[in-house]
Image 1 (tube, rainbow, N blue to C red):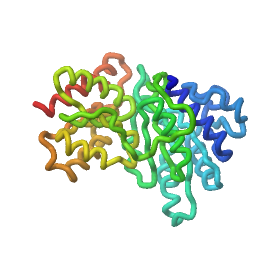
Image 2 (tube, one colour):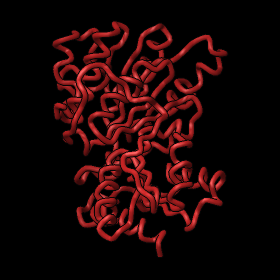
Image 3 (cartoon, helix red, strand yellow):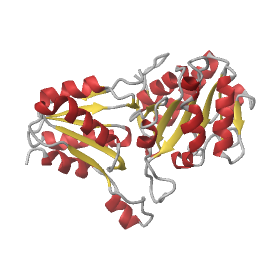
Image 4 (cartoon, helix red, strand yellow):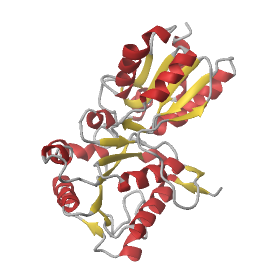
Length: 324
């Protein structure tokens, strides 16, 4: 199987879906002129023209509002948010319009649109360009929220999101764009709402997603040296959450750790912990452990940023707690 980067995988997904369906188009800041700030849209204007690859003003409210209107009119817009942090600017459009129109109109109209939202920490991007905000949107009925951790799922989940008749927020960690991995050729989709058991284990279930999934894999390798067998689950979708896969795993291993880069308080890990506490508390042989970032904005200073980061070592320490 060929090896390509995460960014190339998303570009392939866009090219294939725009070729397959003439109603798919992309819009956002610096899309046509620059190819996106991470190069994830390079070449699309040459292939599809500036009528389907549209540069917009610097107004997230206008971008999302226009995308909602286009979706109502029968198009399938993909709107790029530049940085996930900027979704706060257009939160009303997402929260009160995009998520609710299908319900409020009794199912008469659908909103088949995707918001691409680069998130997560890169070196010294500081408090307004580094956040992981998936938990905000997983809390909103009417939205689907997906977060790939590798190039294959980056392509498969983006294609699935574009084809979905519901609004989907597609978070893509900025630190993953250069990551290379095996990606199947040809048409395929990664199902939304279905987690993947990346590695079978018997001692503890470790649930993660996005960039942290790659740290979780390294953590499992480290723990295996000490005889701890970790079952790894890549969530891939945080709304809906694949409850069945998580509960089946916990029933087998009897221990649970959840790791994410987002702030620990009220994060996706809290929801999964509550799910297991409500439905599988009798299976547990140890308290549930959550691993996440401190409850503070992302610092700029390099030494503080280093302390703030969730790392492989942080996850290893979290797993060891359930065996203490």
